[in-house]
Image (cartoon, rainbow, N blue to C red; front, side, top):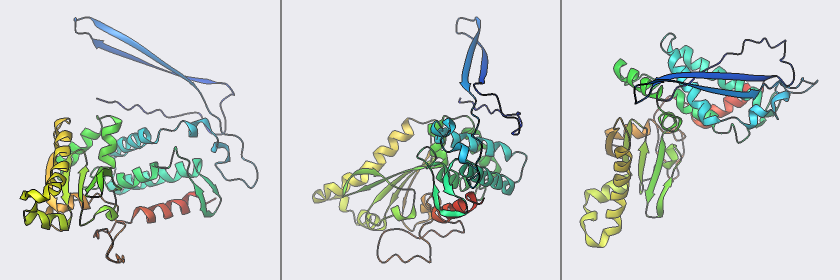
Length: 318
């Protein structure tokens, strides 16, 4: 079990901490050893407080935080999991709409404080590598089964949230932003963007959401399989292509508890929804595909690009 601990800073902003002051946090863990004896373990953490520099005239509100040690040491993956746990905890007392607004406000405040930009100029907005992935984590969190209850029973929603509250950072990130692998004749399996553009007729996709493992066959691959080309000796490469994602899916399921649900589906079939619902809807009915890759995602959700455009516009407001 992985435990998250949150601290509220009670020092008011108009009375900054003295320079050089350090913080101390001590954990006392009491447990029973295998030999029957009770033990107490003390763990003490120490670190400096960071006071942002004073703002100068005509500078953005975050001028004092651009080169802050907090910014340079920010762990965006751990922060995303901590934000997700806090959001899930709030669902017990608040409406989902209020929780989503809290997630949005928290993200806007974070970007306003740590991004580099010229006030009121969204085109100047830049996030350092330490923060560059955090907005997309929040984008996928907003669309996840933790905050979107459509097609989930109360029992399922409680189960998903319970697992998120106890798993480690790596597994929790898979729940928030699932991993996607692409298999094709063009080379070895490769990581693919969690985007509608990744759906191709001649590829196989392996989606891992922690709770589900989905093997998704493109339209052309599914047609070749139905014609049993993989059973012919001259198409051994196609047979290997079909077997590779299934073998990798089995490795995932063998190493995970609770065991995820295993789904094998084809493009345009009913169970393809398990993959399509997780993709960034960059391709919609208004998109011009021009015979290229990508599959239309029928949803009211905005794409990651539109989400980022709105985030930049709100974050740079002076």
